[in-house]
Length: 297
Image (cartoon, rainbow, N blue to C red; front, side):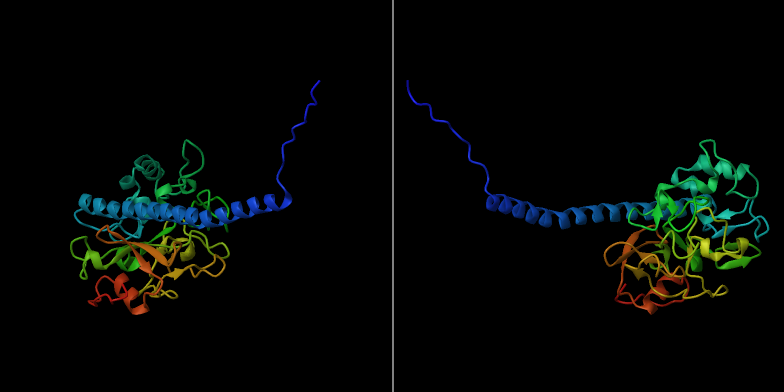
C-alpha cells in the first residue's frame, strides 16, 4: 500500500496579510478624494439647477405681470396692496410647479403660511426641494438644524436691493421691471446662497411672510438690506466655508469649494469666488449704481 501524503494548503503569513491590508488602505485613500469630488460636483450641479429654476420663475412672473418683478414681501396693507400677505418664495410657487400649495395658502386668507395641508402640517412646514442646496449642512430633512420643525428652510435668499426697494407698510416691492433694471439683468444678482439655519433661533424660512412680520428679519430669506433698511453688513461679500456657529446671517455664504452660487436677474447662474472684493460685490447687488463690475467678478 502506497503511503498517502497529506496535502496542506499554505495560508497567508502575518506579513503578507499586513501588506494586503496596506494596499487596500492605499487604494481607499486614493479613491476617497475622487468620490468626494464627484459628490461635490453633483451637489453643485443640483444647486445650480435650483437657482436656475428660481431665476426662470422670476422671468415667468414678470411675463405674467406686465414685466413687474415679484416683491420681497406681498402685503394686504401694502402699496400697492396685494391680495394676501406672503414671502417672495411663496409668490413664486406657481412658477416652480407648486401651484397646488400656492392655492392652499391663498385660500386660507391673508396669512398664507398658516393653512393646513391635506398631507399634514401647514404651508410653512412643507419642504420644497428646489429651495434647498444639498450641501447646506445647516438644513436637515428640510428644516433648520438650530430650530424646531415649525418652519421649513431655504438655502436661497433674494436680493433686497433688487426686489424690495419700495417700502410701504409691511410690503417691500421692487421699483424695477425686468426690462428696466438700470445696470442690466446680467450685472445684477437676484438670489444667492445663504445658510438655512445660523445661530440661536435665526434661520431662513421660505414661507416667512416678510422682513417686518413680528419685527424679525432674522428669519426672512433675504440678503442685502440696504437703505432704507441699512441692517448690519448688508453690502459685504459672501462668506465661504464658514461654520454654522460663526455664520453672519446678514451676508450670503457659499457651501461649495471656494464658491458662492448666485442667480443673476437674467436667469443665468454663476459661482462667485471667495476672493471677490467688497466694492465688486456691492456693485453686483445694487441694480442702479452705474458701476462696472470689477475684474474679480
